[in-house]
Amino acid sequence: FAELSLGTTTGLYAEFKEGFGDSPFYLLPFARAESQSEQSQSNRELVSWSLFRRMGAGADLVAELGADGDIRLGYSLESAWGSELSDGISEDYARTLGSIGGALRYDSRPGSFFPERGFHVLARSRWADPRFGGELSYAFAECRAGAALPLSRRLGLGIETFAGTDFRGILAGATAMPEERAFTLNAP
Image 1 (cartoon, rainbow, N blue to C red):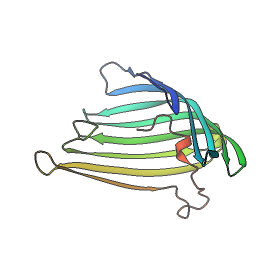
Image 2: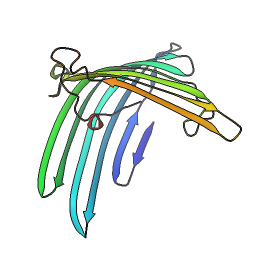
Image 3: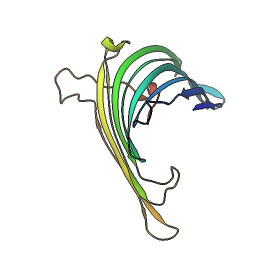
């Protein structure tokens, strides 16, 4: 699978699914390169501007749980860098992240856009540490769930829930999670 996007966000994403015979397991290596720019103006003057880039690669070992679900364990090494200009102050940053993670996914909805019925669950966690490459250290866990309920022939109700933590204040030594948008190479 490969995807190319052009516009304020320009990027290339590719993944390759390699199965292990008739087993429910497969390897999913992936890579992404992306550039995103945003700017805002007021009275024809540039108020703020930002350029955000990321690139990296990783792989997931996936076990299928029937037609609608899977369990994933994986590793990724990612870099994010950018520049921001706001109120005349310029700031540059560069971060590298090596992480391991896991996810449990289930989705019984027949379609991704405006599904008529079904439910979905995503439970995932991620642990970034300098021992895995990179320079940041944090951990998080989250769970997202939702349902599409038909109320009539042309009317449906969508329900979404979310819970998550970076363990700060719960576990001794836990650090705050940085902006996760910078590190989502293969987000479910």
